[in-house]
Length: 312
Image (cartoon, rainbow, N blue to C red; front, side, top):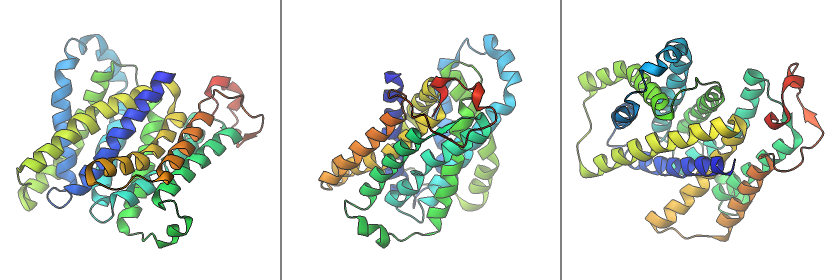
């Protein structure tokens, strides 16, 4: 279980960098280009690691094609295109703020799709994590929440967060395949879904400039934010389920702030550490390491079939 925390944390750290890089290149690369080449490169990286795994898993692949297509559509094609489109009209801080509603969406979707229970303990943990995110966004001053200006990109980011929450929930029902083969398959399907839009981009809009900064940005996004981050996140969901893993998304704004300190020479403040402590406490409350509170909320009709370890 502890290893799953490491996987989820590493994934959010790499995705925090993705928000910063995506914002930095939004004027030189379109959302379709960025996402298409991101997953095309990722698929090429993963291809050698799938050698010898196709034949023994061919039956599973055929039987679960619809599931793989749904995961590719949500987690590969739609989510990241929406993120990059949102970053064209909103800042990375606003984007990570809106993205922090993922831990709110995931339990709700899991309740309807997976018949997961909601507990008071889980809701308290989620609330503490969101409070930590809010402290980062407000820079330690609660009144600054009223000074945040929301733009159309924030609405697009909200839709992206909903799509990512759906991907995270569906991931818990993903077919049992080797990690690299699974990611290669949804990457390839995602590229296929993006291909018609990329064709339009090339024919009628043009392509991005092959500059050093664009190449370096694409390399980071493909290797770290695509391949490594997705392998880590998928493994975390496999081990501890979508609801607990989804809560780690609240680490993205905190990591974004720390990365800004490292690369943009911004100052590190006390509220960063307070926020991080609240988020970690919220994750711990959802970890199942504490005795579960007896009060359950929104019990589903099937909830009595759910084992204790599956409770939120």
